[in-house]
Image (tube, rainbow, N blue to C red; front, side):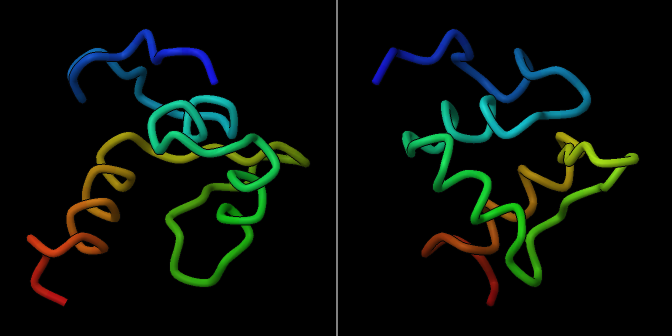
Length: 70
């Protein structure tokens, strides 16, 4: 897998596509698409396209790691 071009959350665009989510999490694009269809994952559907708002993605990561409050 290629190294991510994003070094901090500030480097991310406002909306992430499946490829960007995969790069950030270090997973395959196929796994990213599966994740984007899971209940509770903060995805926004625009027509047939799935995108993730940056702030919601950051919150989801924080809530789904040991540092989260859930």
